[in-house]
Amino acid sequence: MYISPPNKIEPLDSILPEEPLLMMGAGPVPIPARVAAANSIVINHLGDTMAKIIDQVKNMSSYVFQTDSARILGVAGPGSAAMEMAVANLVEPEDRCLCVCNGFFSNRLAELAERAQGNVTRLIVEPGTSAALNTVTQYLEQYKPKILTIVQGETSSTVCNNDLPAICKAAKDHNCLIIVDAVCTLSTMPLHMDEWGIDAVITGGQKGLSSIPGVSLVAFSELAWQSIQDRQSPMRHWCLDATLADRFWYKKSYHYTAPVSGVLAIHEALKLVCDETLESRFQRHLRSSGAFQAGVEAMGSKLYIQPEHRLNSVVGVCVPENVNKQELISSMSSRYRVEISGSFGANIVRVGQMGEQCRAHNIFRTLHALGATLASLKAEVDLPAGVSALEKSLQDFDSAVTPH
Ligand SMILES: *Cc1c(COP(=O)(O)O)cnc(C)c1O
Image 1 (cartoon, protein in one colour):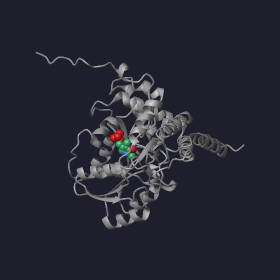
Image 2 (image 1 turned 90 degrees about the vertical axis):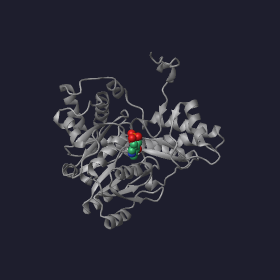
Image 3 (image 1 turned 45 degrees about the vertical axis):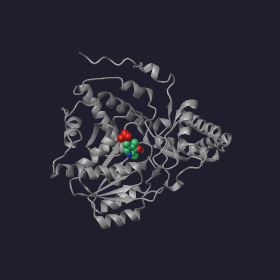
Image 4 (image 1 turned 180 degrees about the vertical axis):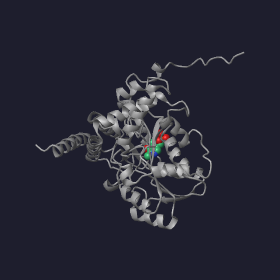
């Protein structure tokens, strides 16, 4: 006797839309054709070809993280697995951890530290603002943590911790190891792992890097690596044990079967970053996100975060009171085939400006979809003014960069 096969399974091509939706939310983001092609290949995870690819992934990551670290590890898993890898390897039971919290993901770092049995203090940052150096310094003095966790960009609240370099310096001065979550920011804005003295940088595939979700990267400093070597208590995770992952990433031996296709995809994504160069990529993000923000405001909508605290890689747009957020998101998707994200809590929608999302044709289409949908839901918007401001912002940016 067998249980019979299910009888109402539709094939993928009847479920997926004929034309893919434009992914303009907080991730995953659209992937370039080269990344998609790489993701369709399976090779031997321990062969010479893979060894060469792994070497190149590490070399390119050194550039993207701006580090000489010889401890750059890939992980089969989401950005959260990379977060857990950094936290679980560095935090031992009773270790004091100071977790700077600006929202959902920075709180996740605190939760991971608690699960690693760290002695966690949360510094809850005032909503809508970035972490202030003097507050962090006070907490460092008061709690003397071994580890500080912080996000560069908080995707949930669309806040950017702009004071990150100074905060890292203060933490270093207090002999504190620093874990930075750069999942939504890496390759979208400057991050200098070595220069800033960061001990672990975390990133995922599906945001700034514009690769697929499910393969992530963590880079550890020498100091962090020493601390992992010196652990007194056993590492409870097996898959996320950095010393085991090191076997695969540096010693060509087996840990678990690496997600080869995803590693090939991230290889291509990193190659695109290297070809573009970080400087031009950051300019592209500033230009695109700035123009989108100018368009939103000129259209008559409000941005959620004040400019000095605002994250460029994920933009929060306030939803007018008379508009239902869910209806806004679903009609943008069904009518205009543009996907954006809701939020955890605040009455905002979030538009991503990470990697492939930062193309002029994508922001025009998104602003149009947003404005037209808001108008159809009886919000007061001036869409032509928005589109015009978007174009003007792009032109102004270009003439400032290359003066005529
Ligand atoms: C998306 C995100 C994560 C989590 O990544 P997953 O791949 O969803 O696990 C963590 N931190 C930040 C800042 C993020 O934007």
